[in-house]
Image (cartoon, rainbow, N blue to C red; front, top):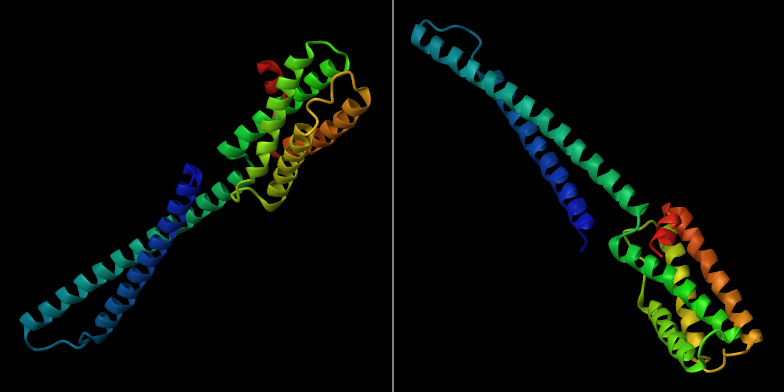
Length: 222
């Protein structure tokens, strides 16, 4: 469970407890009001008895007023926690979780490194064995995206975009892992995979746009 999910659950729990507390004070308010109504309204001959009733009435009035204030306060607290939790839930659904952020960043570099190695293999820009090793490593890393699923904290639309991107990256890696020895000096095969990379990058860009990811930051790091 992420820290955001923990905070959200805590906020909801606090809102519920505050609401329950306000209902208890509301019950107290009506109980005290009922007790006040039951007190004798006529004066007795005994001053001591009259004084006692006046004291009871003042005490109950004070308690009733206090219960009303606490009830209103707890309602405000409940609404505040509920609103904060609702905003937090919305904010988190529209922003990448730590795990998804890490996956997106890693995927960004994997796709571009893979593209670079394919072009080198096509143009015989490096040693064949070295390129095969690099492509094999990248293919395995991309294939591992088959185990990745977007966090359910994200909105449904966001989850769909991320999962589509993860699946495209996984499929690219799985396909490449069966062809690692065939890319060198093979423009036709390389072009096929470059098209697949471009498709995966389309899903990537859609996710970037949805989550407002600053791609310039990646370029600067690289």
